[in-house]
Length: 115
Image 1 (cartoon, helix red, strand yellow):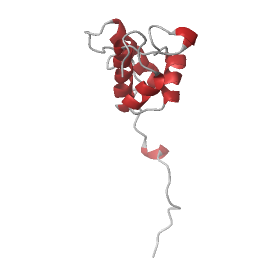
Image 2 (tube, rainbow, N blue to C red; image 1 turned 90 degrees about the horizontal axis):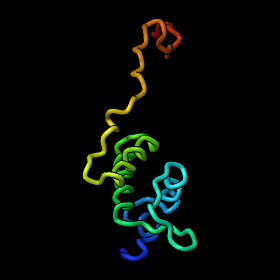
Image 3 (cartoon, helix red, strand yellow; image 1 turned 30 degrees about the vertical axis):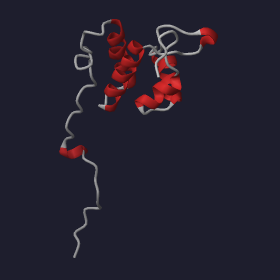
């Protein structure tokens, strides 16, 4: 239900994405993933470009990308809808954990022989 003059409501967007309206509002406050234009009374009204950005945010977070990183990539979707969401794979990631040496492995038993 898109109203070309006003956009769709946060509740409608949330139902479409399968997330709660609180999640959508939280993404707006925390990560700047909000509608490009606010309606009268500061109500959020989402345009098709805004919804596409939220869909990208959902896709990225569902694939394991941290929300802040997903938001940066999703915002690029709104600013350049034809460009793929680059930067997610190129973003610096946490270093891989070093393998544990045998001396530092956790001990699971007392070491006493059984039987």
